[in-house]
Amino acid sequence: MRKLDLQPEKKRIIAFIRDYLNGAGFAKVVLGLSGGVDSAVCAALAVEALGKENVIAALLPYKSSHPDSLADAADLARQLGIEHHVIEITPMADAYFNTYEPAADALRRGNWLARTRMCVLYDLSARHRALVLGTSNRSELLVGYFTQYGDSACAFEPIGHLYKTEVWELARLLGIPDKIINKTPTADLWSGQSDETDLGLSYPVLDDILYALTELDVNAGASENLDHPAELYQKVDRMITNSAFKRKLPPVLED
Image 1 (cartoon, rainbow, N blue to C red):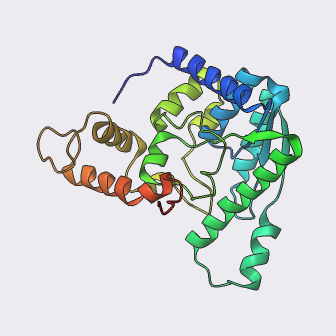
Image 2 (image 1 turned 90 degrees about the vertical axis):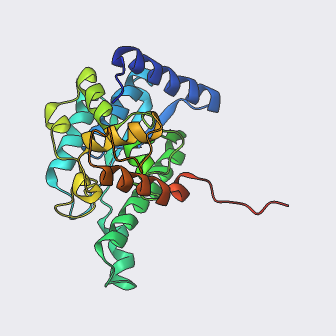
């Protein structure tokens, strides 16, 4: 796994946020604050880049969301001193499923929640004349562990180049509370959900393999000199390939 010098990397991300907004003609950002480490890191970086008065957080719980998610997000917003709004998305989401699709499974409902949150964020961005700041990391973007036009919808991704394990390291440098850093990673789309259970491997192992496949050009079909079982490299390689469409703009038929 690569070793980043986090202090200059932090400065580089802060400059990226500031420069991107200046170039786009905006002064403010809106982001979804989930109570997880990724959005916490993004919020802290945005405050350092733009000032707390220019960062607006939306806390968007659903009825099945863990109470700690909302509490941790609210505590962090107060710690950072940023404007934040709690907007319950249960009535919005349930109106569709209760009326038209009561038999929908957890995955469909989870994707709908992610896209409902996206709609709220973009409406708030229009209200505040702000850009939507993304909170995805490199690990999840590479394997497609996100909802297309849901949590992946944003103006820009300040930590999209960082692996999940690097986000945890940066969180410590930024002074993010331990209760956020140490909690089990989850998209909190349904009760008991765990990111690592969904992915089928831990983030440290995933990051090692992603780094090997995407930056060291390790062959997924190799069977020797690997740090992890060969089948895991093949699994992750399939995840990258099968989710490629989610990382591209919709194709247009060329003349």
